[in-house]
Amino acid sequence: SILKRCIRARLHLINVAPHLGSAAMYTDFREDPNCLSNGVPTMATDGVYIYYHPDYLTGGALDGASPDDDILATVAHETYHNLLLHTHPSRQGKPGERDHMLLNYACDYAVNAILVEEGFKIGKNWLYKKEWTELCAEEIYEILLKEKQKSIQKLMKMIGDGKLADKHIPFGGPSQGSGNEQK
Image (tube, rainbow, N blue to C red; front, side, top):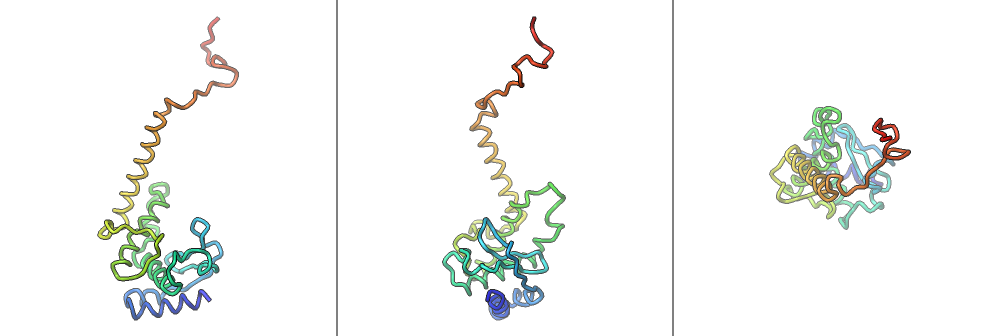
């Protein structure tokens, strides 16, 4: 079962990465059928538990990696999120202050860079950029935020800041309710 493999991975971490193995020993695993990423069964953490979808091993998340390598790397990944306090409310900022999705991506890039550096085999679709190896999640977040803003600016330039969009006339015609009717 997935739970048994997660427990084995946690024990194996003690041998291959004692700092992670000892931290992972304080985390329990919980099955959660809602643990999906873009419809694909996955694993997640809230800082207390590591959640796993019951179909994680068969749901397409493995990216060609062996199940044992994948679960080992994923348990290590989730444990790093806990160690780095990525799920702690103080990291999230005030409501509306940060783009939660971009922050999640930034944390994944930061953790995956550490995993690669430590010799873990990550999946081919995991978020990783070698040039971001020395950056923390907050620095990566700022890069992702600037890229998002550039994309929005590019879109606005493409539509001409609204100049190419159609004009919406008030219901009843251009002079209805404007008080500027000509007689």
